[in-house]
Each structure stands twice: as structure tokens, then as C-alpha cells.
Length: 190
Image (cartoon, rainbow, N blue to C red):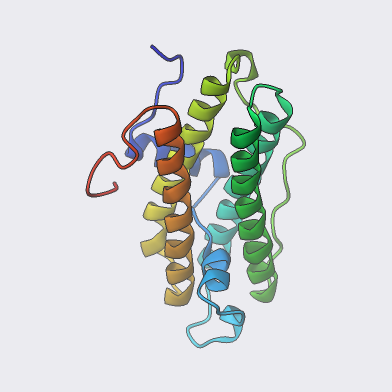
């Protein structure tokens, strides 16, 4: 039995929203993935709420970057797993770059990383522990993005967030497989 209890999707979304202080998601990253570099200039300009959602997404992405750094520096990961973790961390860095750029284009100020994150380091004693922790974070990201997509006033930002959602879902599926769980547990995400 694991000491990491996987939250339900609804609980994960609430945890994300509560931790981030507001709404969720990343529209900028989706714009990049969709090949749209001028989201802010398009019609249907984003609202203050959209900027808040983007900043919440940035905060979650920054937390993921820090978590993957913790795993990378733990000395617990084999070379192939370390390479995968750093690859996923790179994806999160790309998300942040795009999201922050979009926030600035919309006239806002992007949030920055916290000086310290409260991770369960005392529970990370093996590679499996680190993978379970990463899977839990990715599951929370999937749930959060899923909840955020319909909240955007600017539909282009919603499309971009859906694209990032797909990336987070792939991370989660790969991590689930790595820990011996069914990679795609159901036909629908909630």
C-alpha cells in the first residue's frame, strides 16, 4: 500500500484551485502548440478573469517544474527515468514561457515561482515513490485544466488550454504505466 493517496478528480481540482488562489489553466501554452503566437491581438480579447486563470496555470506549472527538479536531484531515479522526468520538466517550462508571454501580451504580470514548495520529501524514499508523486501532480493538472477550459472568456485561450491538457494527460498516462497501473483508467476524464 502506498502512502500517497490519489485524490479524486474533483478533490484534485479543488486542491489546485485552493493552492493557486483562484481559477485554473494555461491558455498561452495551447496557443503555442496550436501555432498561434498572437492570441492577445485577436478578436474576443481576454478578460481579467482569463489573465487570472493563466496566472493560476503558471503557478501550477512552476510547482511541477520544482517537483521534477526535486525528483531529478533525489538520486533515486535510474538514468532512463531521470531522462523522462527532465523531458516532462522541459514541457512544463515551455508551458510557463508561453503562458507568461500571453499574460504580458494581455497587459498582466505573470506570477513567479515560490521560494519554497511544500513537497512530501520525507516520503520519497525510492524511484517508485517519486513516480507516484509525479503521477499525482500530473493527475491534478489534468483535472485542473479540464475544469479551466470552459472558464475562459476568450475561446482561443480555451483551445490552447485544451492542448496543454492533452500534454498533461500523456504525462499522467506514462507515469501510471511506469508505476504498474493501467495507463488510461477510463474512457472519460473527470
